Length: 227
Image (cartoon, rainbow, N blue to C red; front, top):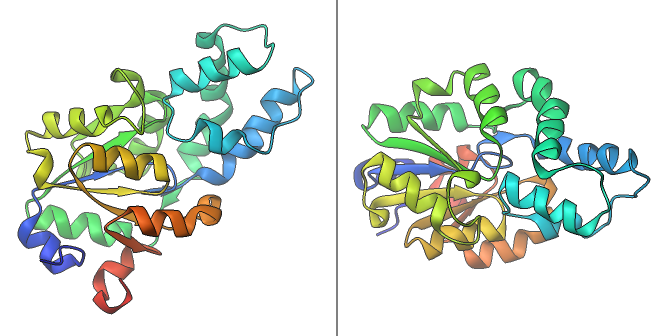
């Protein structure tokens, strides 16, 4: 059964779980600059490998990574507060849904499919964009990586989201934009569609190999021949 078009998703999937950044919303563009600005305060250049290094980590795990790699005179909690402050206004005003996502959210809601977010981001920033884009109309559950034992590629955040949605993992379809998230979904026993994103374009081939399907945006779900 090909479940990767809108009609078969609506007939056969019981829950859709979205990663947030780079998957449901277009937000990854801001984080490189935030890393550059934050590290620059302490005299560090942003390493070229850092985004790949922290991929999938929870907000807390990322703070631990920064603490271990750089000599920054802040606690991990202080770093998280600082990052939230640096990003909050952008998440409230400058972050928008990926193309076709609004239509897809409306259609799965009409089909009675429940939806959740499973993200490595902070609760504060998820809350900001959740309110700004009125996602409460479509998404009933949010789970952050800080609420579970291990971040992606461990399956914890997806399994917890499925538990909160009261749906068996095998009946969930995940949308993800990075390999660690795709692996986490597969580790959870869930089908997964990889979503294209400019920030992870260098990983496109790997994403296509790992996922059950690959889309450039959510409009692809309405044009089966492109999958």
